[in-house]
Amino acid sequence: MKANRHIYRQDNSAQVGIGTLIIFISMVLVAAVASALLIKTSGVLQQKASQTGQETTREVASNLRIDRIIGERDYYLSINLNDSGHFRKDDGTALPVFTYSSPVGGYVEIENPNQTTSFDITINSSDAKDFTNVKQTVSADSVYEYCFTKPGTYMVNSSNSTVTDISSISVTVEQDNYEYGYVSKLRITMSLGPGSEDIDLSQLIVYLSDATHTADVKYHLGKREGIYFANNTATSEYFSISEIRIRDDTSFDATQPVLRSGDVMEVTVDVRKVFKYGGAYPDPSYTGIATRTSLDLQIRPEAGSLVILEITTPGSYFKSKYIQLLI
Image 1 (cartoon, one colour):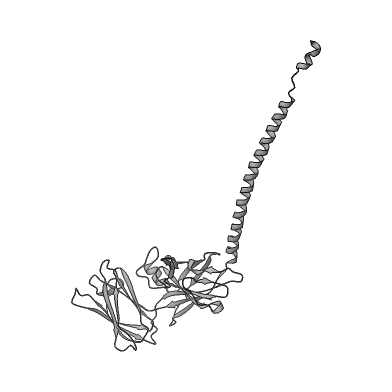
Image 2 (spheres, helix red, strand yellow):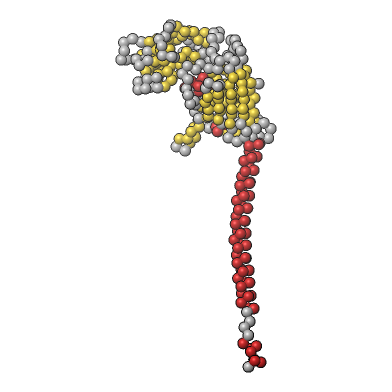
């Protein structure tokens, strides 16, 4: 019996081999899952790095250059309408006189602060050459602006059928009259630096501040029934864009104002309207940028670095209509 006991001895080597195999398979599965995660993560990181690199390249390569800034002075006769449609000064007080003098290119600005009533305005002249009488309805809570482009004597009438009297003012427009006011518009000439990518000016934002007023202005590009349209006019909220030079002799499209290498374009900001009627805190008494005034100007393109400028108006404007503010 003792001699045969070795026949019943247990051998556990097979069980140890199965355990090792299970551990090995588990390690392979864990490695496979980890590899899948690493491959997915590396792909995401590669895509993100590529996108970041492209955006960084656009930021660095987009070089918006400001060639010059011209300040334009205009003459404005600002008057208000009262609740009866009669003329009042811009501050609401009675008009001291009813005869005014304006240079050619001057403006009469009529504001109707009435929230519910519209009033009719007529402008006529007996001696202005080729002038056609103007009839205009000034809607409630709106502003009507007319530019005198021809010399002569004009009568600006405000009438209302509910009252018997009519308010009128006389404006004598002279060719050589230099009665300009403060700087009302900024004409900013732009181009691109060497190697710069194209810049879509419809996405441009212009920040303005003179320490007393602040505002931001953009371009008016909208979409109606799937078709883009542009109101390319400098207003209290928007700037306008005009071409100075377009490469390849192509025509300027206001719905696609893209600045390319070789192009030169001009952005016009009506600072007077922006600070008087627009911005976060409108100032009804604002008349324009006075002499010896510092103006902070920041221009933010869609891609590229922010352009920061500080301009200071000269000590006197003399009789000049256009003032060189930045060369």
